[in-house]
Amino acid sequence: QVQLQESGPGLVKPSQTLSLTCTVSGASITTIPYYWAWIRQPPGKGLEWIGFVENSGSTYYSPSLKSRTSLSRDTSKNQFTLQLRSVTPEDTAVYYCARESGGGYDWGQGTQVTVSS
Image (cartoon, rainbow, N blue to C red; front, side, top):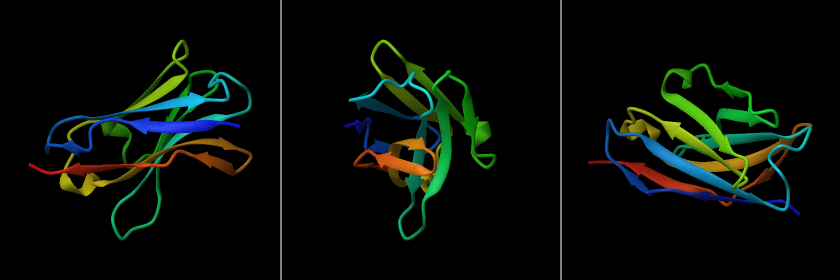
């Protein structure tokens, strides 16, 4: 059974870069046909898809966040990472990593990230 665990700082200052890592166990991030996604939920709002890393390593981004986002992976550690640059308080959210396949998701537990000085 796949397990995903987010890790990273819970507090980031405005204008800095938010960096999160998702560690995957029980499955390889290079296995077809899965996609490895980052999704967030701001307080009082719905889920917002950020982007994903394909099993081949290709990356896809939400158009609204593309200019500030970088996704990468480390296959030796079975991890994938999110970097979100120039954050503002509007980037405060619970951040989730997830495995997507055929429209279904396996979720990490989520991690709260607050952007505040």
